[in-house]
Image 1 (cartoon, rainbow over the protein chains, first blue to last red):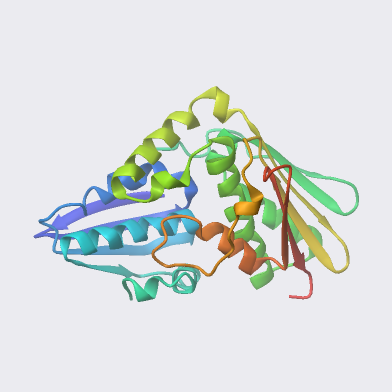
Image 2 (image 1 turned 90 degrees about the vertical axis):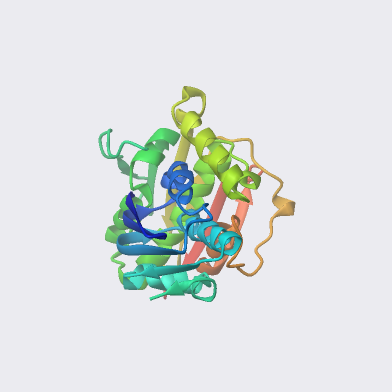
Length: 100
Length: 176
């Protein structure tokens, strides 16, 4: 998985590409540290470049949701392919965050 | 960060007329798209494709992830329950990925089939776990871990463990 992070006036845009799986768990702390901040007003994950996700990969979004509850912002996951969207929906993430 | 594809592609061996297997180390399971390669090889031998193939790949990915993380790397899911402990989990995983004691441990993926079903097996070299304590409950969207086993239970037609959890056998009907 490759990722990039951009903070625009408190809105953190995180772009993910490749495969988001257990292999990437060591990077989760680095990604999530951008959200664990009282100055964050929103988090937007662009997952259009993701072509596969497993359960460990999904846990990244659970931690993002936790950070959003702690600091009072919303999380949006956008651009998901049909395969990734189906996995997120089946896991119930559309009830936690906005999946667009 | 894991360095991608630093080794030669993993080999997949035919095991008799109705079987196929792939042997790898923990490090190789972290460097290669083993679940995709294996499920594609299996699909080629069975003439399968589409949703059935995706089901096989998804279940194999979850079983392989468990074998690597909880089995050979001996990482405790309790460390995934908060952001702070998740950082520790990631650091511990990164360290063990490069520790030969953990990185060189074997993992085997195997499949056998009949006219009616395919059984997919994943075996690790970890310490095993208490099978009796397993829960295949409904998925909790807010859960930080444990989702993989629930997914496997949903995807496979039957699941069984042996050798104190070091091996999982997932059977899929072929008429999907």
